Length: 116
Image 1: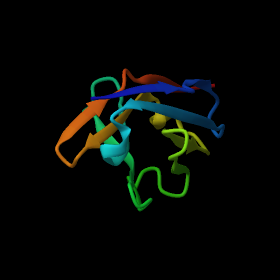
Image 2 (image 1 turned 120 degrees about the vertical axis):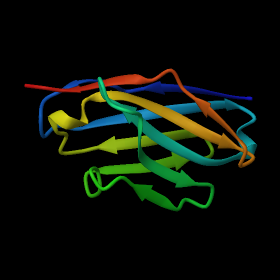
Image 3 (image 1 turned 30 degrees about the vertical axis):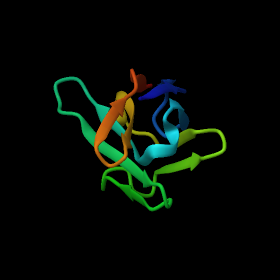
């Protein structure tokens, strides 16, 4: 089992920045991949960024160059640095982890609102 807790969401003006954190606990040694997903009202959940156990990263086209995913293995924490935020980035952001390449776990989500 893996428990995930997100933090760092909030209200920010367009062009601003936020850093999301995801603290993992439990069977963290078995985590292969960690992701950030987001879901806007009326839309499907979408993958925003991914980081593998070997620190290979991937990003959705919509956030490339603006968002950076990273992880601190010593702290069992993953981050999403979000810069140049736009109104269309408004969503609930979810942390997710894949354990032993088989089972996916989710956090409870954190709201990010980009508005003036």
